[in-house]
Length: 640
Image 1 (spheres, helix red, strand yellow):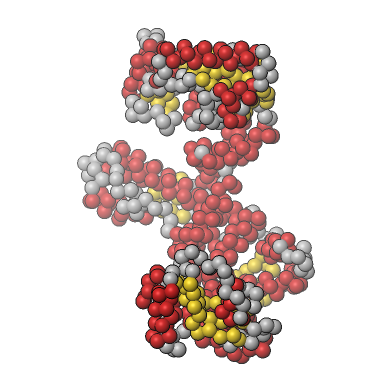
Image 2: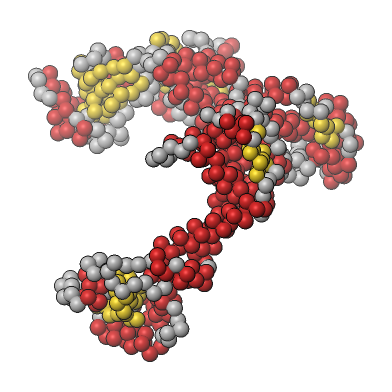
């Protein structure tokens, strides 16, 4: 069995069945589709922002009706039922709905929680263990809490974060937004001197001890000069110490810091910028560097000090205080939305309210029956138990007055399941809960589209836009370009509108790397390519014979358009410079000078555009006869 809640077709049907609120009256009916006033006004104003000359509402109505007729034609052709359409449309609809489907109070509490972190800096130690070391983590934490294990000893012995382990677990300052949320929240929620619960950051398990908590000092802007690097011998370290001391003495004597950094710093990332590190917050740099940078006053210089990266001198240039809530709100909201676990909290709270509103529940009596069923099958989800589930008429989920039976739910139960009657019952209960949440999510999206005109109009615009493109492609754009016979007939029927003021040189030009190949190619073209082979096929025929040894181009150009066509067709001097190093020689095939175009291909872009316009006009005339349109003029007069 496969867990897959609601087929795409059912999802699409659910959203397309939306009815708007009575305050949004029906403006028109196009075929069987109702168009609300809000949709018309939304598209009218959007269209006017894109026009050089704004249209009146009366002028726009005709264009809007044409648009809706094409959409109705697409629906009649079944384009709204294809898998490709449903997949694209539903993804857009779901993505667009996501920000709306969050509990506002819960989201605000999350924002305030995250904002509070930005106002404090927390100095922490941690013991980091592999993600599967739960038993060891619980044992160490218990020992630390009851005093039988010293925190620093446990860090040195067990922590897989070697730099902090060597310092007895001292990690450094945690500032907001710099670490996985689970780690950050545990660090801020634990009191000074306290030990956090075991935290899974996604990178490992952590036991955090908070050493200090103080008001955030914001960000500092600093530059540095670095000498040395990792893994240096003692003698090399002392040699670099002498160099950094000499640099420090020059700086104290008045040397320019940026100039000294460019000449002497061994940090390739900042040396050419005069050592400038930009602004950074607490916890961004290694602990020793961080401590010095934040202890300095603005516009001051540090003494040389050492980190694992070498010897440093810092010049603190400036600092910023932490930003206020209004300045950070949108950034925090975005960070929450991009964090799946945090975003789910507000979404789940919203869906819980939807479930309550529509009297949704998982039937726990049925879950008890599943446990008894599993016990009869020896606590194994075997094929016999699956068959019994698939035949059961017991109600598993109730939502909005509709019951879902175990038999219906069985199709969504994953094929992999735990052993034991209690575990199997819990497994089915979780599946039912997920299914209930999916029903609530679909209902929430439908309610949103009914209640929120902006959202409804956006998804309708996107939906209709997809259908408009597909049906126009089928009836006009692709049809015009593919219908060579119709295109040529249209050109002949309207020949008088396609005129040139000056002659054109029309030819197929054969390019070659040398004279012998050019001679062979032009002879082959003259002897073997009959007049019945259209010009559009000549390049393919030549490629079959000569491969990449020749190049073929179709041209049609007026005098002055191109030096080569001027030479070949209008008696100009041969260009002194070859067209390219690879194709220095060339000759014409099927060349002529035309006073006026002789076929559609001579003015293809213009003829295709006009032919498309004629096809569209004829198509719309058919649609207006086939599809009834009724406009409520009273509602139209209220449009604004």
